[in-house]
Image (cartoon, rainbow, N blue to C red; front, side, top):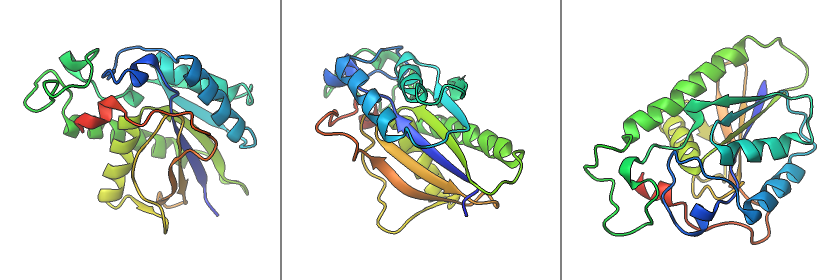
Length: 215
């Protein structure tokens, strides 16, 4: 049996997503479609008995997390800066274009530092998990973050063999309010059993995440 099940959700759509504007760590908000998406993923996760919830402290992630937790009123949301999207420097606020390049741009958080930040939080989370008492049912953990962050975390952990992917699971796109599920055992071994799942959506997402183009 899993010791914990971690549900990692990407935030809902923003106007900047729709307009293909690079957000990075700009504090943008959900648009009407994003609010609808958040309600849809909240409904999909309604039956999961969450024990604890973490979110990026940026508004679009916080609002998505709060919408999910409306069904779980006893769970307190912990807002964590390390769960923020990659800082895109002077590209933040720009539309995708051939000239908006991350190559050689020193104002942008490097991928190495970005992935290190994501893994740093994961290691702190594993330490927290190890302090929880053993019980008959797995702990259910909610994490709400950003497309680039989720991809960086999962790819780094899989590539370093700290996580493995279940049969048939591919690390691909991470669309708005997609759900990634990781099952952890008592030995800190984890299996990605879902990645970027959007089965709860019906045509309610954006194809391109501008920030992810600069991984």
